[in-house]
Picture 1: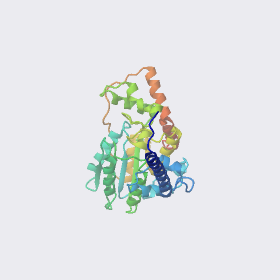
Picture 2: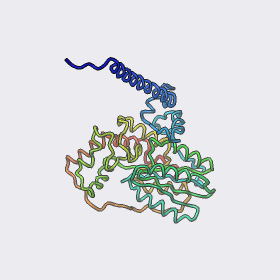
Picture 3: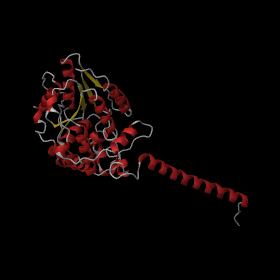
Picture 4: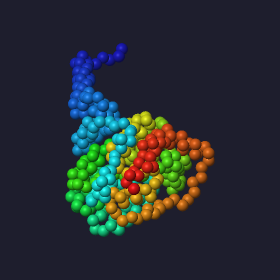
Length: 348
């Protein structure tokens, strides 16, 4: 006959389990109440909703939280030409400001970055160049701290070039800083010009594959993070859409649909980017010259790959399919429709 535990021990164990269950339930209720109050999960419809929080999550110990909640109050804007950022031609050239260059790999960014550096040397002591980037976690905090200093005490005839690359800045989660930096620079009577360069989506992915040569990866290994089931993985490379949203983090941490990703990326462009072009470096140089009043210099190619990239039809089809599934083809197509080749012609 099985031995029974003494009645007092049974009661003691039962009480302990009951107390543990009640504690766990109370903790869940507290956390749910705390989050609902802090982030307004049941608040106004639109940007202040749980849908907003699903897309944008900030650590509770960061000052970005207060800025993020301010963004939640801003209205959503439809992707129309009338909602794109524009430059006041009557004020050109601006006397002072910051050129904020968001450098996406394999878009000709190295050529643009070298050109910006040469412009600083060519245009005298009232121009400067600053960057803080690396390929490791934690770099963004240093970049933001440095950028907060860059936006202060700009001279009346001073231009500062800022180069954001590598792990330096994550636009989707840290969008609030773009608002903050613009407001601070413009409050000094200067211009805050955010710019980047994009290119054909599939061509960009193909160009990135040169990065699999040195670690000797197969195409399957190199593109594995783009497979649908691997949405929460970091890859050896990132596409243009993912870098604009998540920088070098997991390519789709919140498992958003490609339509949601494209919509969010276009929203970021419309809210913050003043000069956006597709593989048009001559036009980029002309526009920056017009904005700043700098003496014209031509952009020369830099960091050009001199090897060969040879793929079978099946491999090229795989690159195409994964790039489309990730949303990049739709993203660049949306950019082509909104940012037509002549959308900044009024500056030239």
